[in-house]
Length: 449
Image (cartoon, rainbow, N blue to C red; front, side, top):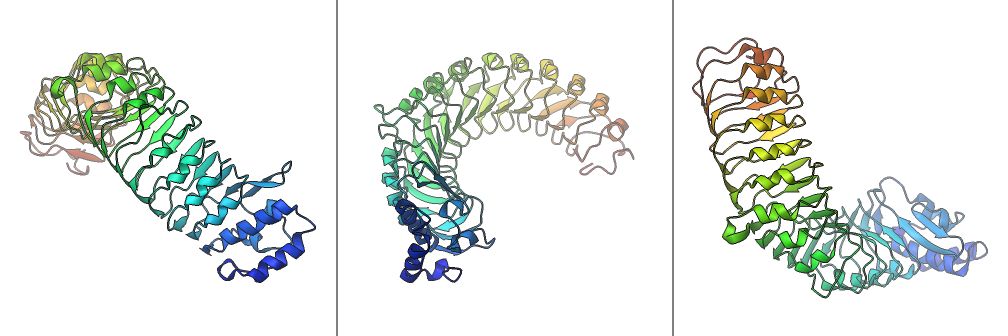
């Protein structure tokens, strides 16, 4: 059998297989073996030799690489060839593996279309074809998979609208759906009469989806991870939808065309809708068209909050001191807005901050020396504001600080020599200020100094 390569698969090979294994495998396993070999004929390159066992007539099919069987039913139930760098195409003959529960071909180089016939694997619970080179439309037939729990088609070249049966097929078993990083178009096809009550992960980022977030998504009350970033979605921020998702941990809505409430003037209803999401860890709203002030209620969000991205919007007003209630925050990004006022001293109470971006606003006043109390601070970007006064000597206490960006302000005085002593700066940018004197030798070797 070693001479029966997939690229030269022939009827003669099948006859030999049937003769050799008929005494060792049940008739059903013989059929499954033939289907697998037919699928294998579409694999044109196996650079790691991972499927060498498939070429052996003496190896039981249930011992082949990536194949698992159910001893009780004598059927192949799992085909997992993930991460083997296989090249070729996916044959529709896989639909003959009628007892398949898991099909994972992710992280390979499969090309062509997704066979519509996969929609007839009615027992399938996990389908992962992510990180391949698959193109064309998503087959509507995948909506027939009523037992599906896990669906991952992300990171391919898929195009066209998302077929409605994928979201609305009378099944509520789906827990994970990832269609991200493709070229999918149209609206998110979730109708009011549909329900994805078990859904915990919905990842649709980096596509070309349009329209509003469908109201029916509010029925997915178990959702933990919602990522709609980098699409062309419109309308008000989906406050009434996320309000009904108390288990949310990650909410990514950046780089769309969302606006705030009351004619794009009021962010408070949206932040209020997240107050009961006690597990919320990350919120990304960057790169939308959001206007309004940052409401004080932001400080009432989950104590588990780790990251918040509000950059590249049209936010105005001052930074609310109440934000300091987010004591576990590690990243705060408010850059590229229209914020004014001073940097609130309360910010210095957020001792777990590691990265702070406040650049490209209209902040004024002096840089609080108490920022040096944030011992984990590794990046501080206050550039492109209207800050005045000296660079605080206390920054020498920030032993973790690697990037200090203060350019394009109105800072005065001299450069503290201490910046080159207690701090291991990699980048220091003080350009386009009103700083005088010479560059101390202690900081002269820092990039950008």
